[in-house]
Length: 134
Image 1 (cartoon, rainbow, N blue to C red):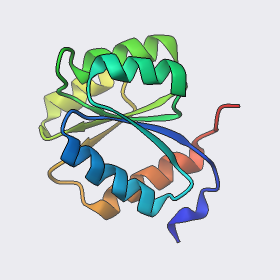
Image 2 (image 1 turned 90 degrees about the vertical axis):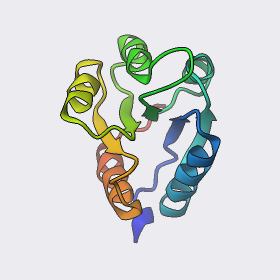
Image 3 (image 1 turned 180 degrees about the vertical axis):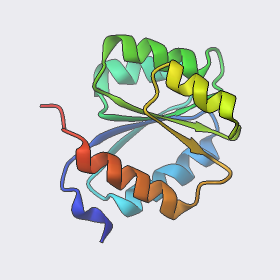
Image 4 (image 1 turned 60 degrees about the vertical axis):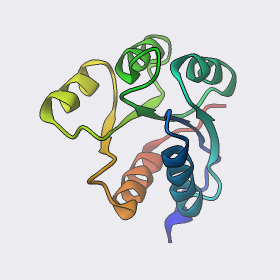
């Protein structure tokens, strides 16, 4: 059963496509009903939510209006080394994976080739290691 992780993990989904954002949130809510989820559609909103919501886990689209998800990842990482950042992208190329790692992302998920089950398995693995901030 997927809800073995009994933590109220704070999660932020940073994605400009509202349809994808809602679909992804639905996957997480189904697999992890205790997860507290906030959303942001762009870099500015994401930075505000990072400062007020203090997420444990961030799903970051690589392409955002105004600022790339990679640059935003770098900014967030500079201020919080403990947050887990997972890059979301339709561009599953080695150079994107390498860039995500260089900018401070912990994981990389391809929007097009990752199944619902693969996403949930990755999150379960991450959460089994995640310490909720007090």
